[in-house]
Image 1 (cartoon, helix red, strand yellow):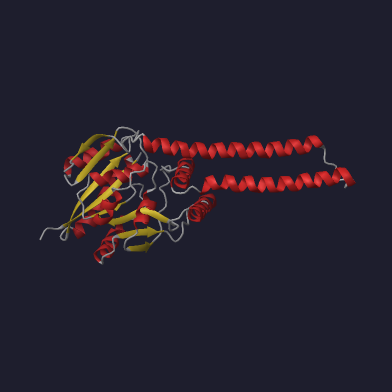
Image 2: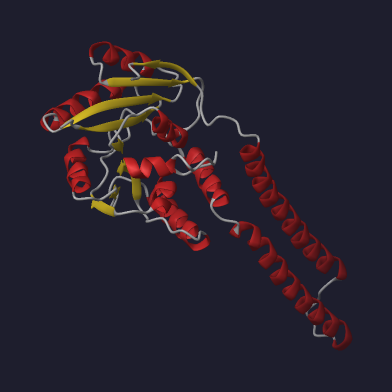
Length: 315
């Protein structure tokens, strides 16, 4: 009876100091389960500007179980997480960050739950002691807004550290959208899920976070506009509210002019306020429509999700 094959997928961007470290730790863990499972380690280099690619190539030269996929340019982490789908020959796939914040020692626990017939095993963080107050608040706010406006809810505080069965992978292939959130797509597939609760490790002091606030903001906007049309509805609600309060304000102005309520509204002040509010609504509407039109444009031109420049040890 042939062994089951597990693919360990590591999206990598500017991680030259971490590549060899996490490989050694993976070897320690995988050597313990090697009698029961075959494995392959897939590094997806998202066009790093440092020597990440060189560190991966060095490992590939001595270990044929390590596969290297090199993008032609930077496509982003969500696309890097997707690239393994067509390239891995799996029974199960484990996605893990290279930045050392996902403890590789937990891999046997993922596999153990998978053997108990769970097709999706994922990590949820109970708390992040080392995160800033702004980071905690922004994460809470994103999940709150996302789950409020989206028809399919996403469990808060989850990470990309997860195992998915080949059944899930095959369905994952049917999702073709360009603006994607890996976690949400896996969540919408649903199937039998199990949550492993453990905290992430702190970011090494020498390493700048690869996902800065600008990237997190972009990811949040893409996620909200890709998975819900609620932001467009907000414009209609705003129009109704502004119209309602504007009518009330006009009524107050009318009575002030007739019975002199001493509110001292000047005609010019009222016109300026109303005009400013209406212009703000128009600009807000145009911004939201532009976002959605941009999403439609990116989907209909049907460009490839990613372009692979080089690959090593690909079976």
